[in-house]
Each structure stands twice: as structure tokens, then as C-alpha cells.
Image 1 (cartoon, rainbow, N blue to C red):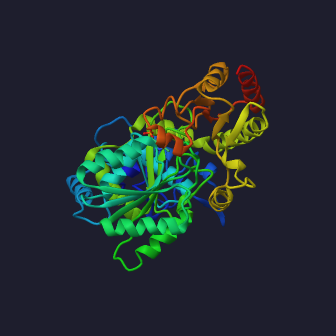
Image 2: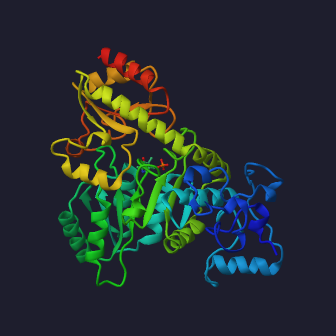
Image 3: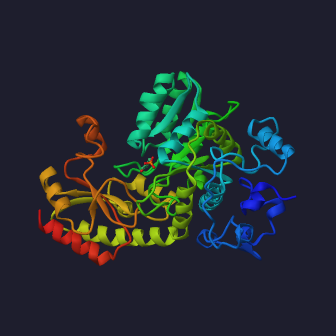
Length: 447
Ligand SMILES: *Cc1c(COP(=O)(O)O)cnc(C)c1O
């Protein structure tokens, strides 16, 4: 007998490649011995047109609730949702819990990081907040790398802090010894609920040594009953240029608003990881309703089809633009991950880059000679690049962190983070690279 999810053409959560649905064309991940690449699977994986009137693309399922075939099936669903039956929710029940568009998106999103399971959320911050709420209790300690995305720091320090959650941090580039020391201090304070990383850090671009964090965690909690999971915000390099699950992270977090969405026209988030961790986070999402809406999920499905094309082109463009900027007389320095190799003083960062990353991304820091006045003249003169915060879209964006995103950060902390008045943050898009260079050239001339 078909389940509801069969009728919608969507396999049950995380089950796309398994069991009863394995013979469906839309669930194939191999041809013979050949494992299909994510860029191939983005076109059809997890959606069977036969079950939706032959529609090539999934319809947008605008419904708040799903009809049970019979009463017993309804009982079965709620036994799963409430934990009375192991295995979790099965099929579609109510749109605060799940929906066909979100499930297809989650199956496809998981492919890039080779995660067992995934969840999507109404924003990156909804993903991060739901993750924290599902993991922490009063008295617990969160250990995190710093700096973090400003709203994440607010969430940990000011919001979870109100509920008795403590935190300790180490700088993004910390060595194994420094991480060991912070973990020992944290364990003395209380139960370490989670180790939360962000790499590269914004706006310093400092990389976190995920392998060292995992080794430090495993050593520090070798005798403990449970090890705190390692979660990492992979928004800046994922899923193309960094795959943290391969380096010892347990959970990967995304603001899908950025490269995954990629067109600066939606806000969404994701969390990926093992079935067990995702089940914990799912029950919190079910409770508080932070799920992504079906329309946004559909737009993200379209975005994922071109993810590799977009990110590859943006990465190539950024390499060319940065090579141009680096040698310009009005430029003091370019903070671009592609330049770590061979830079004196950045040997450890270069080593982390070599082990963890397959590309430098397309978001970088441009330090001009001068201060705010010079930066503003450069920004105001740009003709192609738009002045806006955010990143990872098809279009090139430029902003001034000291006067915009980090305006409220105290001066001392700004200095420590390298957020100076001559810093311009740039996210390169998929335009023609030579046009972007011409734009930079004339804007630099205007300084
Ligand atoms: C944008 C961003 C977020 C927050 O995502 P939203 O989709 O805006 O909620 C979190 N982390 C990083 C690194 C980001 O760039």
C-alpha cells in the first residue's frame, strides 16, 4: 500500500535511497559502479514525476495539512512524531513538521556534504537557534570559535545566557594546545553541550582547524559517557569548497540565503548531520515551527541545480579580481584565502587551508591605503558592484564592515578583529571577470 509520501512523489524523510523506493529512477545515485556526482543528482534526485501528474519539476505543495489514508495510518504517524514508536515521523502529517518540497530539498542538500540527513529552516539564524535550543540546558557550557556571525554571538551570549547557559571561546586560528586548554576550562565549569565553529570567520577570514578540534574533543572526553557534538557554520565555503563532516565535524550549519540560494532573493537555513543528531533537532523544529516554507524550498531546489556552476564561476572570478587588486598601488593588502599559501606569518592558516579547503571562495577583504574616506570613495564609485551586505549571490556586492555590519562593535574588539576603516568586504558574483576588474580599476582611480 502506498504511503502518503509515495503519493506526493517524495520519499519519507531521509529514506530516498533505501528500502521500498530503491528501484525508482529518481532515487538512483549510481550507474553500475559509478557514483553519480552531486551536480548530476540535483536535477532529479528524490522526486518522481510519475507521482505528480508527470510534472518535470516538483509542484509547490501549498497545504497546511496532509490527508491520512485511514485512521490507523494517522495513529502511526503520531506515534512516530511523539516518540511512542521508534524511527521518528514517517510520511507527511502537518506543514509545521515537514512538506514534500522541504523533504526533496533536504535529501538533495545532504548529498553535497554526504550527510545522512538534513533539515531546512526559515533562515540561517532559525537553523542555528533551533540547533542550540535542541542541545543545551541551564548550566551547560558552549565552547565556540571566535569571532562568530554577530547574531550567533548575540544568541549565545545574550539570549542563551539569560537561561543560564555559559560559553567559552578560542580564536579561529587556535592551535591544538590552545583548544585543549579551553576544553579543560569548559569541562570544569559544567557539562559541555556543544562545540560550535565558524570557518572561515567573518570578516577576518581566519580558518578553524576542524581536525585539531575533533582530536582535542576526542581526547578531552575519552572517558566521558558522551562527547559534545562539533557543529560548524560552513556558509562561506560550503558545500563546494569545504566539507567539514570529512574532517571530524558532526553537524554542518548553513545560511542557505548565501551561496546555496545564490540569487539574493530568499532567506533560509539548513543543518546536516547524522540521523541521530538530526532527529534531536527535528523534534525541536517540530515544536517551534522554524521550518522553511514550501515556496522558498522550491526556489532553493532551482538554486541547487546551478550551485556548482555558480560557485565555480564566482571562485574563478574572485581569483582573477584578487590577483588584479593585490598588485594595485592603492591597495594595502587583500585578505583572500587563495593567497594564504606562501604568505609569511600565515603558515599555520595555509596548512589548515591545504587540509580542509578545495578553493578560496569568492568573499574576501580588501584593505585600501587610507581610511574611511578612501573606502567610501571607492565604494561610491563602483558601477557594477552593488553596495549591500550579504554574500554568495550571482551579483558582486561590496560593503564597509566598520561603518555597517560591525558599527556597534566596540573599537577595541574591532581592532582585534582587523575591522579597520580601510577595510572593504567584497563578495564576487558570476559576472564577466574582466568587467569586474574594469569596475575596480575605475573605482580605485576615483580615490
Ligand atoms: C548570513 C549568515 C548567517 C545568518 O543567516 P540568515 O540566513 O541571514 O539568518 C549565519 N552565519 C553566517 C556565516 C552568515 O553569513
